Every structure is written in C-alpha cells, then in structure tokens.
Amino acid sequence: MESTSSKPSFLRNIFVRLLLFGLFIIAVRFTYVVTVTGESCTVGDFCFFSLPESFNFVITTSTSPEASSAISVKPSNGGVSDLYTSKDWIKAVHFYSSIFQDLIAHGYLSPDSKSLTVETRTGQEVYALRQIGVEDSIGIFKKASGPLVIKAPQNRIPFDNNTFDFVFIGEGKLDNASRPLDLSSEIVRTVKPGGYVVAHIVPTKDTYSFNSFLELFNSCKLIKSHQIEGLDSKSSMPFIHEVVLRKEVDYVVKFKKTSGNSVNKCFVPGHKLELVKKAEPLISTEPMKPWITLKRNIQNIKYLTSMADIRFKSRYVYVDVGARSYGSSIGSWFKKQYPKQNKTFDVYAIEADKAFHEEYRLKKKKVTLLPYAAWVRNESLMFEINRDPGKEVEEDDKAKRGMGRIQPAKNSGGGGGGSKREVNEIQGFDFAEWLKSTVTERDFVVMKMDVEGTEFDLIPRLFETGAICLIDEIFLECHYNRWQRCCPGERSAKYEKSYGQCLDLFRSLRESGILVHQWW
Image (tube, rainbow, N blue to C red; front, side, top):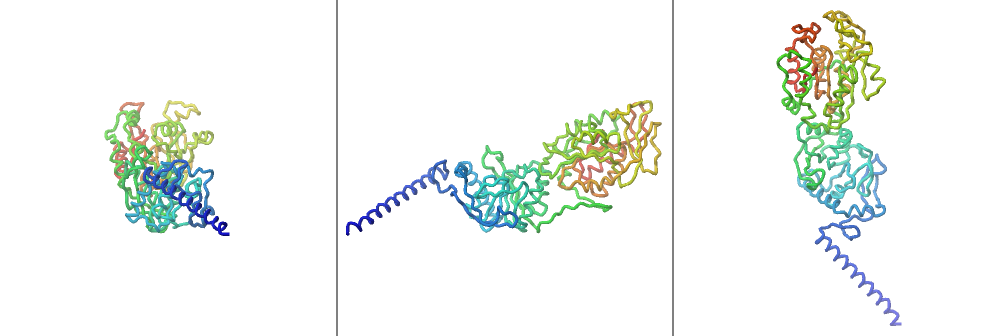
C-alpha cells in the first residue's frame, strides 16, 4: 500500500520539474529576444511582443454592426503573425509610440482618450496607442484587419457624431484622398467638441496649399504646426508636417450658398495676395499688333499651379465663358497646356452661339454645356455675330465664324464698321449667381473669359455679389478699340473701351487679390 501511494507523488514531482524547466527556457528565450534582438521577432520565433491569436477590446457605435459591442477577430492562417512579427511593423509601432507619447506630454492625448486612427491598413498606430496605455483605440480602413482595424466605406467613418476625443490620420493619407473634403468632414463630425485632430501630411511648400488644408477643417482651430522626421530616410515621407487641430464647436456645416440679389462682399486672404505679387507683369504699353503680342505673352504667364500646390482642394473646376467650339480653347489649350497637377477637372462651357451647341451634345467630351449667354441677370438678349465685310465663310466652317456678342433685347442696334450681322434672340443668365450655386470656397476654380466686351459688365457683377472670390485664376481677354489687322493706322469701332480702361480692369482685379492674366 505504501509503495502504491508514493507512485503518484513521484510522477507529480517529475511533472513539476518539467514545468519549471519549460518556464526557465521561456524566460531565457524572452530575455534573449529583448536584450539581443531588440524586441524584433522573425517568423517562427517566440516573442511576448507579438500579438496573441485572439485579441479583444470594446468600442461601441450605433451605426455599424461591425464596430459595435466586443470585437473578437482571430487571424486567419497565421498571416497576422507574419505581419505583426515583422521588423518593419514593429519599427512603425515604435515610431508611432514616440509620436503619441509626445502628444500626451503636450496634453493633446491622454490614456483616457477615446481614439480613432483613420485610413490605417494594418493598425500600427492603433497598437502603438494601446501599448502606451490609450486602450480605447480602434482603426478603420476599406478592408478589415482584425483585431485592430475594422472595415469602413471610403471617405466614411462608421461612428456617431462627437464620438472620439482624439482622431489621427497619418502617412499622408489626406494628401492622397480622392475626396479630401468628404474625409475631413467625417473626421470633424466624429470628433468631440474640444477634441483633437492630428494629421501627418507631406510638407507644404507654400501658404496657399497649407491654407487649403486648414479650410478642410472648418470647425477646427490650428493649435500646432511643425515638421518632424519620418519613419526613416528611405520611406515615402522622410519628413512629415504634423498638424494639431482642436474642434471648437459642435459640428456644423459653415459653408453657405447664397442666391438672389444679396450683396456678399468677400475677404481675400493674404496667401492669395502673395501669389498675385509673383504674377507676370501686365503689358503696360498698348501693343501695335495685339493679336501677336498677347499670344506671345503666354510664354511669360505664371500659372497658379506652377506656384502653389492644389492637392487639398475639394474639387477642380474649369469654366470657359465664351467657349465657342471644343477645340477653340478647351481642347487646344486647357486640356493640353494648363498644368493641372494630375487633377481631373469638371469642365463647363458657356456659349450662346447655337452654331457650336451640337458639337458638345454629340461628342460628349465630358464637358457640361450651358447654351446661354453669361450676363448680369436672367433675361432675353439679342446675340449678334459680326462678320468682316468681303469675307465669305462657309456655313460649316466654324473656326472662321465671326465672334458673337450680346446686347439687351430692347437695343438691337450697333455692330459698327459696316460688317455683316446675324442677330438672334437668346437667353441670358445671371453668371455670378450661377457660379455661387455651382462652386464653393474649397474648390479650385479656373476661368477663361472671352465675351466680346461684356467683361465690363460681368466683372463688376462678380465683385458686387462676392462671386469673384470663388475664382482662383482668371484668363481674361479684354476688348478695346484696338488697331485693326486689316487696316494699319485705323482702330476698330466695334468696342468703346480703350486699352487704358482694360489695364484699369486688370489692375483692379490684381489689387483685390485675384490672379488674372492678359489673354487673347
């Protein structure tokens, strides 16, 4: 009986010794990983730094079943272990840990902060937050990567208004967003009043670009802006512009579209005035051969997009007022020559001459045609096509078709110079109010205007309504009683204004902070 009772005791002692030996091996291995390899693990290594197979945390929302209650995601086929134990992933975690610790030191983040990381593919930022004690953290991306990242639609955040104390978006994700305004609006919507938004963007080289970025966060105040070193010199962002913003009020849409006859003067910010100072000088002396001088002047033009970065604009718009045919300026100049910084522009062609309308309708060159005359109010107008005397033009030769201009319906006279005239009644529309209903302050708007003298009516109307401040860059052909090409020493009687009055118009635009170029 005695020998029988001692047998379990003997087996128990062996089991305990084996267990202690195993724990000793684990401790030695852990010590080696920490002290020798610097907490980096390779595939197959054992390391306490790597994530467990199942990792649970709680964050709630009422708008997404995927993000509600407790999240428990088990990595599939060991793929996560390959990722989470890689040196690059761990290096990124260390980098973001230092970033977030600095933000904690400055009071922008705390261990109690409910935190969100936007556009994080694998969740390094989320894990870094949890590692330094900010446990209530989650990330979103278009594809889930459990347990750190949940799925979210593009440019949408699946959480309620005023949910988070801290929102982070890194790696220049906002720079490359397809619709930066949509994404930034979602960030502002979900951060609490008094909460912080921290963005890592590619360093801006001009104040225009940085102010465009700030305009995306219309309810936030700039708290801090500085440059820091990136993850390493070989990364896509060796240097980072870190911007800290604080939400000042409950989320509201501040942008307003005005209509009617309301006067809406606008304020031109300093960064736009600085760009105007860098523009090419105006041609101060009237050219003897304006059609040659002005065409050559294109070589001197300093485009806004060659002086500033437009990546943070919400939308990109080109408005051709007096477009004529597609190849006249849209296809021949804007599409081919204007530096668009790889942005896709929405193109609007405003053309009253019905001879060109069918071309836009049939060819559908992704151009929105407005078959009316840009004017100062909505009313019927007389539209006349002037043709040079003695010059016969085939009906389908639109390239040589005379230029059209408008006048109020009650005054159908004029034309001057004995030219042949073709007069039609057309519909005019309030161009300034249309512009205010079509674009916003956050859009990048380029306009070309060639309206045969009507610029002296349209430009003052743009100032009166404040619509002028919605335009970033204008290419303006100003019409005056210039020297005639056909008859040396004679001026055209077609236009009443002088070259000096055109110069005054250009100067008034530039003095108001509008980047305008002399066009032909």
